[in-house]
Length: 179
Image (cartoon, rainbow, N blue to C red; front, side, top):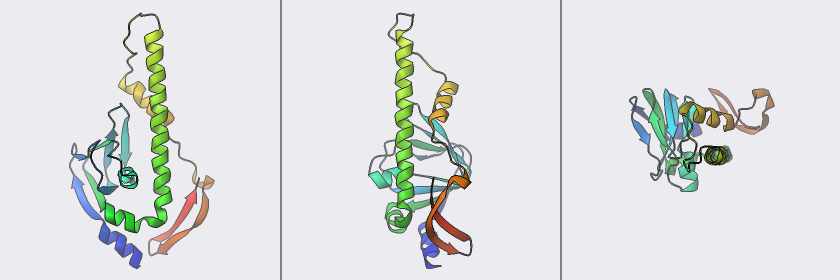
């Protein structure tokens, strides 16, 4: 269909070698990315970090909110990304922008929970026994566990409610759903 061709024309395939930085925290966002193949890691200056792998997307927050990049994304393996400019992103993703905005809100909730737990851990560490002013140190494994515990959980497919059909074509039917 014509819509599918517009999206295909807007996406540029780019390959990154393992260890390459795709975007850096604090940069101005000018592209949206879809991981077609491989795994990337994300990290924030506050200590949050994790992995994202195909099929997944990133870079939408900076384009939608005009804020600087919230995290550094690095290729954990050789990756193949589909990149879309801000102009094409705004023009082509209008019908699904609610989904993108929902994802941005979930990032915000996850960060707020992480920061709250981090402050709580630091207060418990400085107030218990040792008499020092240094906050309690937590291991990388413990930090990973904290982030995983607060990450928004994915619902079951059967729990999704279909709102409407966005399109259909040779590759199937695309429906808008809510959890």
